Amino acid sequence: MSVRIDGKELAAKLREGIREDVQRFKRERGKEIGLAVVLVGEDPASQVYVRNKIKACEEVGIRSYSYHLPAETEQAQLAALVDELVGDEKIHGILVQLPLPKHLDAESILKRIPPEKDVDGFCAENVGNLAMNRTALVACTPFGVMKMLEAYGIDPRGKSAVVLGRSNIVGKPMAMLLLNADATVTVCHSKTKDLAAVCAGADILVVAIGRAKFVTADMVKPGAVVIDVGMDRDENGKLCGDVDYEAVKEKASYITPVPGGVGPMTITMLLYNTVLAAQRS
Figure (cartoon, rainbow, N blue to C red):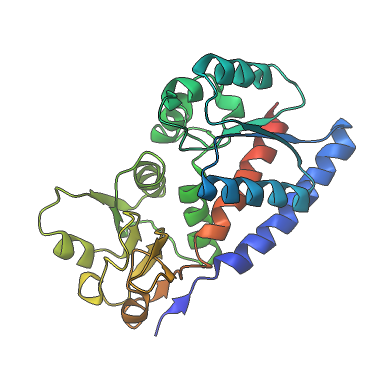
């Protein structure tokens, strides 16, 4: 039976520390830490995410500036808003909620956010610094995974780590973080041959592909650490991850549940990055 990695409990502990850092910043600098959140359109999932981010800011004392634009907003209008936020000294972090409506070019919008305000860790300079193991603002979900490993005393050094998924938001930065922590890293994707065998060789398996219960017990090495980044719905419409939790927990040494695992850590690391951005400003 595995140890359940409690992301909700860990996130709460980290937020206590973040709250103290925010208060210290206010005392020493005489001003608030500010995070701007930009939402375009009426995507229900995005609206929930934005509400959760604003609520989290309130919990730790970060001032949130929320901008909700209509779905028909033009590229030039959104670009002008981002440029305005870039020049505002009250704003230490800028987050443009993705996905944007299809008529908007997300890449060009994100390029307008300077690396020092890129609290999502998506810009090319931050990604490049991460690849070179330099100081950077790191993508929130993989950063949260590393904090979980650290909190549970799981050292990636010398371990075989397999990352299932190669997205720019999770898979690639996750692989770089593990590599920087001295793991031997393999990144798997839809073209990987003998996928089950590769996964079964992992001491640390991080799964982020968006397919409900894809990873089964036969794909997991006995005693492996299994981190499930997925957020899916099963055949009954119940929230689940990319890992068959009930089966895999019998083989793993540590495992994250869904919900209550990686999810709470993502927004917490957004707060963490915002404080870092403010401290470096």
